[in-house]
Length: 276
Length: 248
Image 1 (cartoon, rainbow over the protein chains, first blue to last red):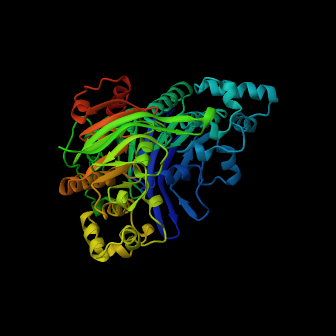
Image 2: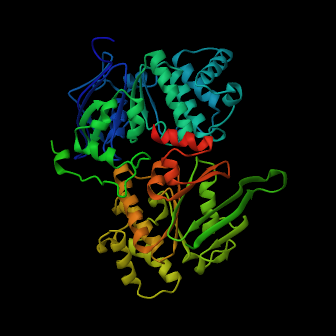
Image 3: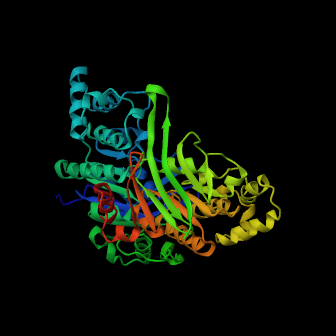
């Protein structure tokens, strides 16, 4: 563990015109798995995208500090960001169906990401593509490399996205609901794979999710967002003993096999939660 | 107790000759009047396909289906519409974007030639816990949970005894999901409705249903009561995997 964390965010604000959507978010991220949870509209995806500056042009980003491994992301221009994205900071999205190019074979897409890092011969590239596909536990890498996005299943597609991300060895991975579109059995495989990569390559992971149960077991720390703000930060293991009424409300609203209740408690929102 | 819905040996295939692909391999189950029955499985297991057969969206299936005491052969008729109605996963996709709530709710009534349209709309909006003035709103002017309430109101307005619920809460946040699940439980208790609920979320099924069937690759591998499921009495290995994933 180094003395200064890989990512430092202080007072991050994002606004569209006069509408603030992220209102003063601060956190640090080291070599760990940190989850950002919250309901839709809480600003969790916007935080992830703001770090990569992948927001629409109208969005205004400001912060007291936005530091990634010695680089000030606030000052970084489009050219600097292009050099960072993929190479050192990477993102995987919810649905591989929409993030893979439908008219380019999977092998070529991964090859493209690889050639961006270091130019190499076609044969060498094909060989590394296969190695990468094997790395993400795809059984017939050669066959899959020749396939197109519509020919593979959701779980396989998500593994292809991870392989593409690995082609450039980033330090920080932002995963935006990477398993929400997947079935339970496949979900576990993708999570295991992410876990492995964090352990082996020292990857830092920012895991954006709405699934509290999943996050409880998979991540180290959890940031709970409500109305554009972090209302609570806690260790994932402590989620069951959350202090904030919003986090407690979310946990209680989950139907569970172990504690069956006739009526599910409904979240009673408090205006004070979104007050500054 | 009388049986409201019985499905016996339901088969469905797409394509012909050597291209034919069977997606349902003899699915059978029964639901008693007033019961809630869950169909659980992963994507591609055929659970939604069963619903679509029962709703009349697929009509070339084979097998015997009886609904409310009458044999059903896949027709889409006014009589069938008032026997069973469907609620879909994504209310934004299932409500017409340029129709107000009133237009959406009035349509089934107009098609069936019913009277007292506005009265019935007020009634059903109250049942699903929406203010009456919502009838003038468009789908984009209300929240996701409210939209799903409108979709449930649309399904209820013809007063069918059977609701076919296709992942009715998976597009919603957990807090909103709790509200909609409570609403569905209340409506069933008040009106003696029968539910066939399709979901990938075992927690949701266990909350709402009395019995459930687990589907895998177009077959029911196990049918059991929710109580047995929660006590860990599931027999089939696949059911146990699902339970383990849900309890994790």
